[in-house]
Amino acid sequence: MAKAFKYGVKGISGFLEPAERELLRGLLGDVISMLEPQEAAHQDPLAALIGLDMDVQEPTDSALRRLLPNVSRNDDAASLEFRQLTERSLRETKIGALKAAALDLDKDEILLNDTGARHWSMALNDIRLVLAERLDIRDEEDADHVHQMQDWSQAEDVGSYLALVYNFTTWLQESLMQAMLQSLETSR
Amino acid sequence: MTLSVAIDQDTREGTRTGTEQSASSLTAPDIPWNLVIWNDPVNLMSYVSYVFQSYFGYPESKANKLMMEVHKKGRSIVAHGSKEQVEQHAVAMHGFGLWATVEKASGGSGKGKGNTGNSGSGKGNRG
Image 1: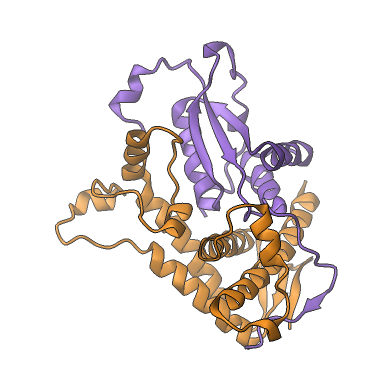
Image 2: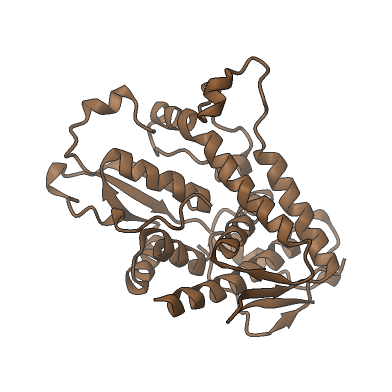
């Protein structure tokens, strides 16, 4: 049984069972592999170095589109241009947070400083965004419906299993956010 | 956004098992742009408030007010400034997984001079 994250003198601490670590490691790995850019063989190495990607397109996968959204609501050309300039580094930012969280899972005790906690909050959030797309959570009503699913003995198909996993990561992120908000308040 | 889940129980059953392009220079520099955050059913209210506090440096009351506006009205303008500034904020918000867009402020140059979105040190930026 996981314990809620707690803010204390040493930082933010958490505890996860081995099976929960394994689950999270898998989820983190899934999101990392979604975000890892496909290296085009003909890519201009200088452009890659400074983070440009002139071949980039809006993702076709809805979950990836949620992780890497358009910057303009109604100007597709402006969104694409922005994507060319920023998407590569955005992917790297996200992968960095996801990998940092995965590394923390290797230690027996999860103890997070401010940066580590921020990485965890971003990583858990990205996991939830992807799961929510797979679960078709489009509005608050859908979210409430998924939230009803709390009993692991009810997990009989992929959908209900995903819902339980989503609820577990939601609970974990919420407990982390409470600890992080407490830490923010203390540092004021 | 989704409401906080109850975490009163201490434990629970877990799992057993350089952004400008030439076109923008046509925009007069004093025309303000807005950074808009859109509601979605996934992001936690606590997380959104944390991002507003830690990234923009907003006090808790302001962060919560903006967060509630996103939640209730579907969107909120959380910062404004030059196009470059709001674009930089947008990419940081995307890093956090918030659904952010930029838009030219309506009503012309009279609005949004306050540049409130630029106060944070950006310590939450670019994890």
